[in-house]
Image 1: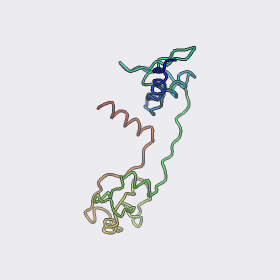
Image 2 (image 1 turned 135 degrees about the vertical axis):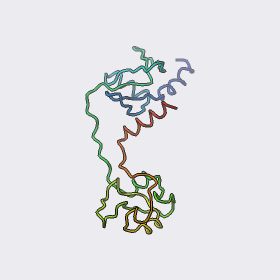
Image 3 (image 1 turned 120 degrees about the vertical axis):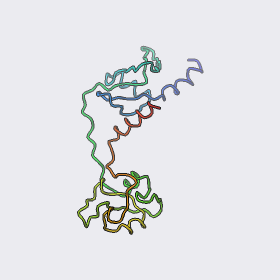
Image 4 (image 1 turned 135 degrees about the horizontal axis):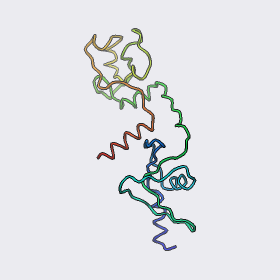
Length: 174
C-alpha cells in the first residue's frame, strides 16, 4: 500500500457520521468505524438527504460507500432514561453557576423558589442557584412578596438524545 494511502486511512476512519433513530430522531455522532459495523451487521441503513458527502472505504473483499447520516433499523425500544436526582452540583450546572436572581457567580447556594415552609418541594422546577445574599434576602418568602424575579424558569434536565437533537438542528439552520 502506498505511503500516502496509509497516512489517509486513519484520518478517514475518524470522520463523523450522524446516527438517527428508526423514527428519524438524531441521536449522536459516531466515528466512521462504528458506522461501518452498524451498516455491515444490518443494524443501520444509509440515509441520503440531498447532496450529502460519502466516504469510500475498501477492504480486500468489499468496497463500501459510507454516508454522513445513517438510520438505525433495529426495533430495540429506546433506552429508559430517568431524570437525575436533584443535587447541588447538577443544579449549579443547569443554571450555569449563576445566581438566578442577580446574576452573581460568587458564594452560590441552592434556593427553593416556593419555600419548603410554604409547601414547596425539592424538585427540579422549584430549585435554583442563588448567591448567599439573594438567598438571605428572599428567606422563606415568595418572589412576589419581595419583588424578586428569576432570570430563567427552573426545569428538569432533558433526555440526552433530545439535547443532541436540538443542538443538531440548530447547527443545520446556521
